[in-house]
Image (cartoon, rainbow, N blue to C red; front, side, top):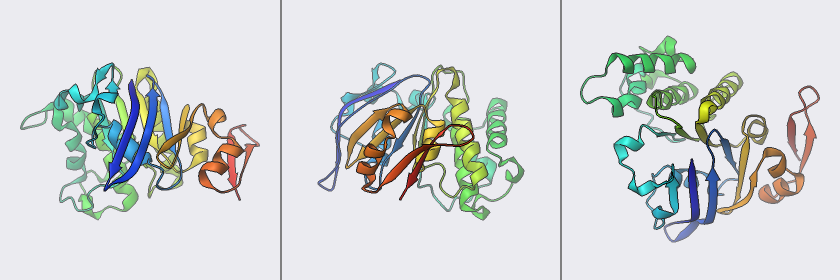
Length: 258
């Protein structure tokens, strides 16, 4: 789906990403994890074509150089959820979600656009306040509205769509954390791909089928959850001791710090 080779990125002469290599296949749910400042969000932004770098030709999306894509066409193949969204948007919730459909119409949305918006709001459990002012919502509710916007944007017949999500669980209660991850997991069916920055390693181990662990702007480990999440590797990345054990009920991997 997407491949990056020798990705480097600097900001204000500070090296953020250093020779990062990444390949994400069709149908993968890749969780990018690592300590604060590891370069997780920067890597996501580079892959999503939102940061200008000197190595754009090193990133290929669907076997085509990312920089060569037509932006309007690209917006129907990939969408991004950012951890920092505008807090002051003087629109109704349904109108914020409709922003995800802008690539599909010029002046007025069509019936298909309204259907996509309604479907996305139902999936993210925000349909009941579709007519409320966006600015009246809590932080977690706003998160779900923006997830709706991303889902609405990718509601099309394009084969193999790609979703980028930067810390989508921020401000969400436990129910909506799980519901969001289940939605992302469902999206990856039929060859779609999701690349998600997560902080909760246990949720990453449970839902993602691939893990990319970063440290100091570099890839420390990349592979299956059971390959990446070892006591030695995690303790090294976070500079903090951890223990790996199995959940007593479902046999999932559990990571305990301290």
